[in-house]
Image 1 (cartoon, helix red, strand yellow):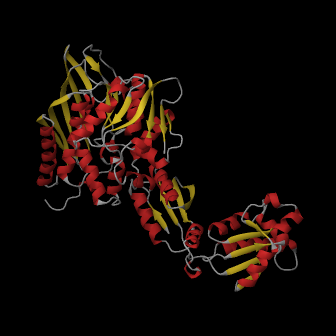
Image 2: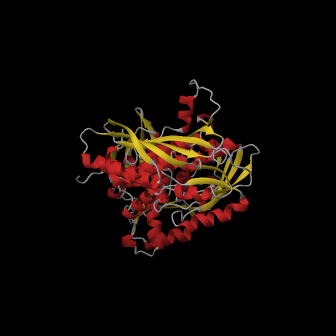
Length: 348
Length: 203
């Protein structure tokens, strides 16, 4: 298989390759939309996945996500891409059932490398309890991999990102900073340990956080990916017409993330996210490098959950006790929106 | 040193700049050409993190970013750490320059003013800057608002030159409030500097 370095083949890293939220809204603005009463979550609320009601207690959740290499090792890349695609189902409170591969590979790429990417994807899907039932592959100069995933959810218990209520506590379930660390790694400026920790975090399924979350009194959830934690937070706040107070220092961070931000090793997605969301964000006294991390695109980031204040401590305790969500932390509160900026971030 | 990072995407421009900064000799600076906003944002952060002075200019459809390491900062740091003078930051010479007039030499005042301005400019652009510059009598005008040499003297100060102006002189001319660079001193300090430093040049 040789010593392949997959990230050398990609322009953008992971979810940093995502089209900005502002540009996307513009692209979708005047397209014809068909009304179907069973499509209970469509693209109009900027949610994680589409939800189609089949019966009063069963709905289909659909999503699709793929990107160029974010890790040098093909197996790791495949597993991260799959975990990231599956995450949107979990962010709706659903369970993935079937998935289809989406793949682009250079014609001359070593077959063993392609096989390793797929093995990462298949093993991650199996861990999620989903079957990969097919897919589509094309030739392309830059490799890309991901999944289209279909899952199931009880529509009465689904966690749209618009359900947050004033008083709720916001809980985040992974360390933040995968976008910064992977960008630093691309420049050869991250240590092996920092890269390994970021990759392990991105490979971790949000399944474990989801399974615990649905057993608690949660009102809304989303996952932190391409729009950065602040971009996704803003979508949540707008969707529920609430305001949010965040404690920037409460977010557990991946080692090396702030150092990368200080040195200016930030992907284009950070600037796009900042541009899209900053008019709604009051970041007062928060140091810029920390705000940069909060705006930076995440890949396969944690779930951002709004849980009733009475149940917050129990949720966090259960998440941490599980062993696979050791970094879960309360990071803010939902407030009633009284005009002005929707997101207030407190600093050190 | 000059780097052309046009067309390079993140994190390449920062990686190139970091590498170049580590190789810069004393008094050297780095000019890097970029043509996207991400690189501009990232290099601005890098300049702050590395304590460099940053000059940004638009140039033929791209952006020129000049990062000037602050030697002055390094000098302060070594002084605080108690490093002997011989180990002081490179680029700071041993000379004390004493300037007692806003003109240079005898003859035409107009020419004298041009000469003093040119001299300070030249000092500011030498590899090694003077250790101390003393301004007294009409020389005090040079460190005050309105002086055409103000920017050069500020640049000298940033690079590590100690800039001192005679307080009595500032008061005599009524320009103390206009002082635009450096500190205020008195004749005792000036006497001590002149007596203890090996190389004093009077203008």
